[in-house]
Figure 1 (cartoon, rainbow, N blue to C red):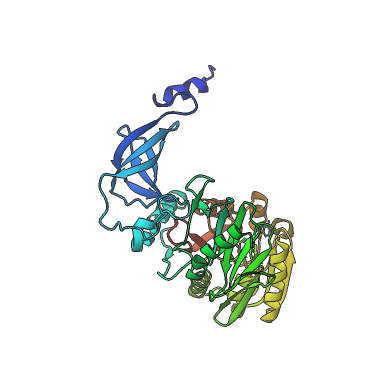
Figure 2 (figure 1 turned 60 degrees about the horizontal axis):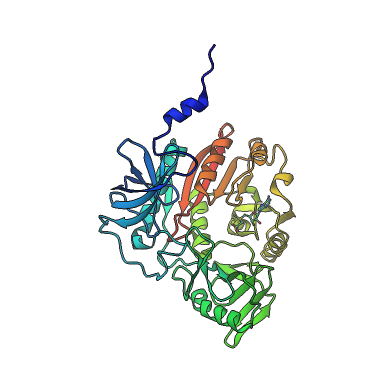
Length: 420
Ligand SMILES: C[S@@+](CC[C@H](N)C(=O)[O-])C[C@H]1O[C@@H](n2cnc3c(N)ncnc32)[C@H](O)[C@@H]1O
C-alpha cells in the first residue's frame, strides 16, 4: 500500500500566508462573533478560519475591531488595535494603567464584566463538557476586592508586569485591591527608595487579612514587615481571616484565597445549597484548612493533606483551635492517596493548584470508595480535562462557577461528582 506523505499533505493544507516559522503581522478588520475561554474574542476570516482576539479592556460580542493578526497553521491570533464600533455597555475605565497592565482584562465592561465572564464559561462548557446543561453562576459582589497583590520593584520603579511582558508598569494605586493595600503602595515605594526596606530588585507581596486592617509586605525570601503609622516594622505575625466567628491563620506570603470574604461566602453558599455532609472529609490540597473549617459542622472529622510545610503547620493550629477532630498530613497528595480511599458516607474534596490533577493521582481517585467527590479548579481547561479523565467512574452531578477574580477572565469551578 502506498504511504501518504504527511509532510506534503500538511503543506498543501497550509494557508498561503503561512510560510516558515513566523508569519508577518497583518491588519484585519471584522466582527467579534463570540467570547471564548480566557477572555478572548473570536473573529472569522472570509475563508472561514478563526481568529482569536486579545484586548486589554474587554471585548463585547458584536463589536467591530481592527486587529494586528499573526497567522498560525490553521487560525490567527490578533491584538485589537482599535474599535470601529463599540458596545453601548462599554464604560470608561477608572484604572489609569488598565491599557498597559497585565492584571485585569475586563475594565471597560464595568458592571457587565460578570455577563461577559459567563459567556466565556458557556463557551468552554459547550466545547469541553457538552452534557453540562445546568450550572450555577455566582457573580462577584461589587465590593469584592483583592486581599493580596504582587508588585515588582525594579530598582527605581514599583509596579505590575506590563501586559505579556516582564517590564514594569509603575502604579500608584490599584482599584481591584482592597483600599488598605492600594493605599500602602506609595508607602512601600517610599521605603524601597529610601532603603528602609531591602532595595534589591525583586517581587513584593502586599497582603491583608479579613477584615482588612493590618497590611504586610512580604519579600521573595519570605521575610515580612507590617505597616505602622511610622513605617514598616519587621514582623513574624500571621495573617488572620475571620469568617462567621471562625478564624484561620496563615504565614504572610502563604497561599490563601485572593478575595477571602467573598470566596468564603461563595464556597459556603455552594456547599450549603448542595447540602454537602458526611462522616470524614478528605481535604486534599487543603492549604491552611479553609474547607475543613467551612464544612466543620457537616462532618464528624477532617483529614487534610498539604505539601507546603508552613501551610500544614498552620492547618494543624487552625483545626485544633476550632476543636475540629482529625489529622493533618504534610505530604504530596499523590504520594499520600491510596487505592480505594474512603467509604460511602465520606467526601473527598480536591483543590489542586492551577495545573490540575496529575494522571497518577486521577487514576487513584477513580478507585475511591467515597459517595461524593468534589473537584475545585481555578483553570477551566484543566478542570474540564480532569472531569473527563474521571468520567468512567465519576459523573459530574452539580457544577458551580464562582467569580472569585473580578475584572480578570479567571473564575473558580466547583464540581460535585457521584459514582457512576
Ligand atoms: C489552590 S490551593 C488550595 C488551598 C486550600 N484548599 C484553600 O482553598 O485555601 C492548592 C494547595 O495545594 C498545595 N499543593 C500544591 N501541590 C501539592 C501536592 N502535590 N500535594 C499536596 N498539596 C499540594 C499548595 O501548597 C496549596 O496550598
